[in-house]
Length: 391
Image (cartoon, rainbow, N blue to C red; front, top):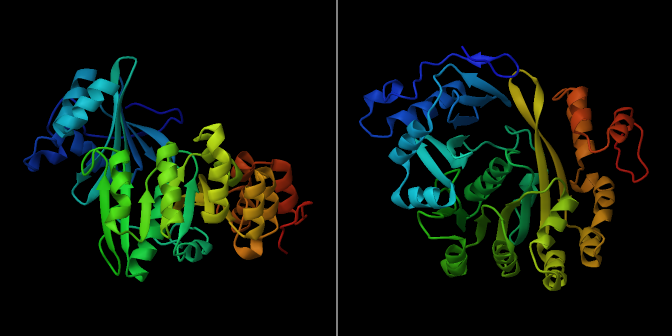
């Protein structure tokens, strides 16, 4: 039995060199990779990691754990990938050394990245829950419901990889799907959550499957008569410009970007553009940005809630818009601290509330606090100079 760094392992009957195992009863060629996906579902793990030269690993309750399997060879991993990759995906993997794709296994969906490291093959797969949970079930602030009620503008989700951005957006899209008679179009690479038409109807376009690339998808987006648009990741100036154009045209647009704070997200967005274009982008943000939601997933302190989101929410009120227009992004955090009554919240206050409600431990809160001393004061009920403490 192998162990992870915490001395924990998960027994497994999986064998990377054989097509035998739980999936044998189903007559399709991808049994070897699929049986690992089924094990992830059974264990309720969030991620699967396969790497040449080592045993399989999963992420369970936020921690990496080793499975009791024989080490993979790079050849076996490549053979397993060939069983599930399309010819186009295989060509991309061989040319670029990496490939993103999705895999449906029964009722469960996985977002997968196959890549090479030191000339060998590795696979990282994220399980996408089939149920789209509500804000309450995800322990998210109820203000998100109000934000999803907007009819136009740009709403951004930020955070590091694995911080739950896609899950939060899915809840907001599902709220619209259930409450509004409208047309929702998503552009994703790959598709993660799958929506069933409710009051709205949803068209989901996957890069590489339904359309060649983001450029082509964005080119035709406005001709598809959308009311709500989701652009999975704003990865360059082209995708971000398209998101702004959609917002300016009277649509509600959602997107994700990697940033560690709301103010930092604005800086990150501007960095996508050449210097001489940033003033125009800033002006567009001033008038079209509705909100930025930045989140982190932290270890929970309750047995039935292994991971809990800490969130920072910036709502573009008149003061925020003025600061964006004047280039005073660093002053935005002070506005957030003084605007809790409008639904805004900063990370420090979010951590304080999670500790007060015993959702996370004080130790975890201090480890993730932007300013541990400020958190300490707030836990004692002492207000900071910029205001914001309630009670």
